Image (cartoon, rainbow, N blue to C red; front, top):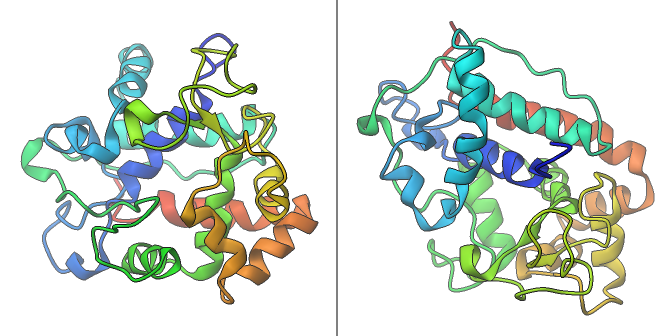
Length: 256
């Protein structure tokens, strides 16, 4: 991570794997409900639009998997996310290991389970807040989880060639670090802190990205108390982020 600056994409990889979980499908045979099963390493799932560019993250993990073959892909993907957050100055996440892996493309989850950033939403939600709730409630998560997990956007950038959002570059991303370009949510976009919340609340810098689903955290009455809390206290954000991250990392898991 020191050389590749890959913290953000490792977090995205883990989230997009575990975020495929649907409690509505929990009665189906494992791993059909989705979740942290490493099914994302197979096509068609890896090829879904929301997963554009995540083959880069998997390629970075391949040499580690070769060195530690006894570790499951599901564990490796989730562990890389936890390490990425702590490496960037965030909290330690006491991740439990022992996840079993999905075994083939037959285990891939359907497209459309991950959150979109702006309308038109795939679930035809009337607002960004309604869409976020539809997606995260389906996983069994809460309003607090939605807001806390959104705070991880303090790391990384949106690249228009991958997500369709953001600018080609800004004054904060034009010269890297790492591959230059994209739009960041924060000025120090490789530092894990609570600046995502403070920057969205203030919205004083047009060079910083604020998507409709970001703005909703301060506009929606249910989300706002948590967003205000995290903007005011990095300690509270870190403590509650860890709780929500652990919940997300264990969705749909079958333990060895």
